[in-house]
Image 1 (cartoon, helix red, strand yellow):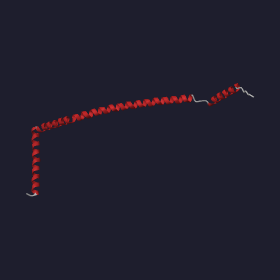
Image 2: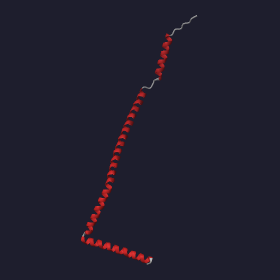
Image 3: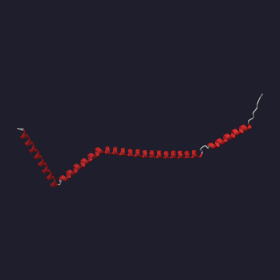
Image 4: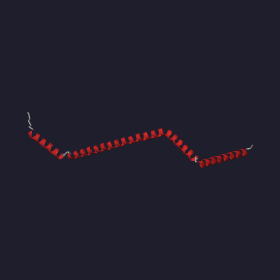
Length: 130
């Protein structure tokens, strides 16, 4: 048996198998069994998917809940920081205003010093011992 004959036999066997499968599907369709078997297979696949993926889905749902809680905590933290910045800005503005009101008047200080020196000189006595 040569290679070409072996390939022809395999192709013939494969074609015969496909024809047999198609005929069985046609027969099942005629008797309404095809839909029943298809429904059974679909239900079985869905149940296997649910059984295998439900822990994963639950795990993902809990992770999503955790991430949402963390996001809410971060939003609260950002709000707190914004409030602190606003409070510090108000304090800084208030200090700037108060410093503006209490800026020293150097002319008044100079007048007070001169008055004090005149008063000291007027009261001063000179005594000379010989």
